[in-house]
Length: 429
Ligand SMILES: O=C(O)C1=C[C@@H](OP(=O)(O)O)[C@@H](O)[C@H](O)C1
Ligand SMILES: C=C(OP(=O)(O)O)C(=O)O
Image: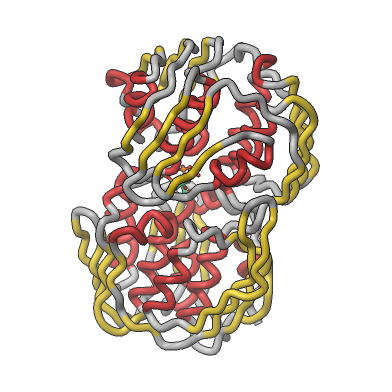
């Protein structure tokens, strides 16, 4: 087990930086490029472990993917040219790869077996397997198709109308990909709008999709054209530095070229609600996605209630937001976030345990957390639970904790943010 020693910061953080490409958008860029007939170019691709899994899956299916740093050249002869993988395909730690690829492969004339790492092997797959079966998919899996490994025997799918019981962009995207290769039309109805990168990207590849508020309709048997796309910076990665600046007195930072798709900006809203001095500047559109520069200057925070429709727009940022809440005066409540229990680890339990180890007062609720501020954090020996977002939250907590923090299993940060510590160091004065 690897251990990293982390020291508290001596001064405020200051400066500007840009963060690596968005993870959700990077996955989707590889998928759509692999389905289009011709050559696509992707820049600012996130070379984190999760997105590298998606690349490997499509290489296993016969797509030619060339990588040079954060640039990808993807040459494909289109959907029909995908071939059966010779070996089981490996999704690693990546829920997004697992759900989206399962959706797509259920409608292609290929047989595939797939598996994941110990964490992903515990995460629910029935949320996609169930509706895919309604479309005619032939999927078998452990625990009655609830868990990986899965065996997928591609079938002729029929479009459906499906009201999603879970608030999940992965489920929505899996069904849209299946709908794209199915006969007829598929309509997905969401309870709350979740991240819409699939919907925004499809037209970039010449695909057709119609979005009427929370109802999304896709036509089957679509052929895609190649595209050249630039991936915006990942707001979920920027979140760690934004919160660091929000809790370290005297700090002031600017994160440039970050994705600010409104389905993803819940953290900015939550920090505003807590009284942070945060501004989005120079907004523009790149490849269908809103991008901007986000500036934050330290200002005292107060507790807030974070709940309801806001939750999907900051779902991956809740661990780092919980740390911010320990430094806010008064009580912060995070509600309606039961989904956190089925991420890389049970993030409700992990956040409560880690922050309590640092001396914060945190109560675990069934669907969220109650955090009592403002706490003086004391360094601790803590584990990432092999969850990249918990690992980065610990690294930020260590900056304001008294003493030396020892982080175990910090290597998992590479899942979404290789270079995290280098970027953090660049902001230290
Ligand atoms: O569609 C996506 O790219 C993602 C959707 C979210 O998961 P759910 O769909 O499970 O909410 C998010 O937590 C994950 O990091 C990425
Ligand atoms: C939940 C996450 O990713 P995934 O579901 O793709 O594993 C995440 O990145 O925080």
